Amino acid sequence: MGEGIKANVLLVDDEDQFLEALSSRLETRGYHVDTVTTGGDAIALVEGKSFDAIVLDLAMPGLNGLETLKRIKEKRPDLEIIMLTGHASVESGIEAMKMGAEDYIEKPVDLNTLLEKIGEAKHKRMLVVEKTRREEVKKIIHSKSW
Image 1 (tube, rainbow, N blue to C red):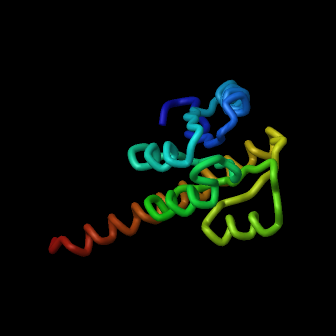
Image 2: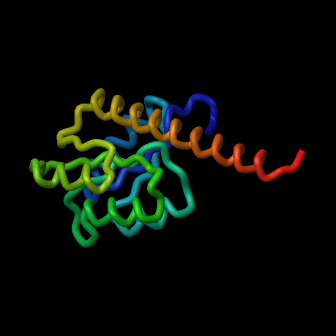
């Protein structure tokens, strides 16, 4: 990750104007942002690219947010996903958390809250990556007969 980039973020929402506005606000604050408008595009993008946080809309046509969350977690369980919706319900929030979402916030998005959630997701992801790398080093050390 380059100097000055606070986090790599993927925004997934079917509302183009919302994506444009939010990505612009994040980028001016030092975040690198990719955007997609469908769950299928999000799934394809995470196969080849790593993100510190994914902000995923719950209500999208076609592949909805919960199904997208499920498929991303099947491929990349290490990714931190923040669910976002304008149609919040306790049930959908609980379901998203059970499926592995890091957090759940409502539209309209309070930018400071979102920035805090992205920071928490990045920190959690860094801890997981660090633990995984330590385990890999241990395996390598134990496999050598020095």
